[in-house]
Image 1 (cartoon, one colour):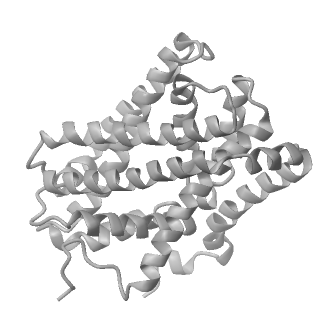
Image 2 (image 1 turned 135 degrees about the vertical axis):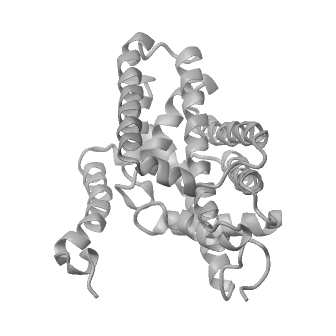
Length: 313
């Protein structure tokens, strides 16, 4: 029995991967042709260990916070049992490896959904947890951005953003109306598990803000190590947009869109492109080390353990 996926032309199946390779390639071409390479290399060489090591410690803390948030969401959606904090952190490391090196930036999310299915009566709940975690994280990141807009440098006229915000809200309403009218939303809603502990959502949002604070702290430590005149309020405006650009599934490991966004935004703060690029890639390098740790964990383990700490039956 053939499916649309198997009968599709080969070029169409390879097109997404080609696009994700092309984006970093174009970024590399731009860097080699137009960037001030010497200034970039000087900026990278002068990042002191006293900035890198504390920033990496914050990155490790962010992984632990992610594990706590994942467990809370599992509990809120009625998991029969929860993984230990060690197991949850280990699976997050492995998931980060797949998110970083597998095109699409969602491979690790699929891994987490698969290994935690046995924790729920409704297997769909494990995937709902992962999707909700992403949505809550992005919602909290949006709040951080608006705090940066309000308290950071006057680079954006808030009134100019209102039509865009209104347009996005209107688009969401239209999509919801169409889904309700077609009946698809109702069918999907009946399959989604209900929250058993809605109060946990408050803690989950709070933990998300802590995680984003640690990310901004990483940028702040790196910026201070590079003698960049960036305040926390500046980074609260810049970092969320760079992070969102980095998670778009148009490049492998997020390289290219994140750097383009951060360099452009930092230019508004009078940071030279070469130094802004060095800051972005220093942050990316710390994330790459975390992903490689996840790869080592996957390599030395015979399999990814299930989220209940028990071997599959």
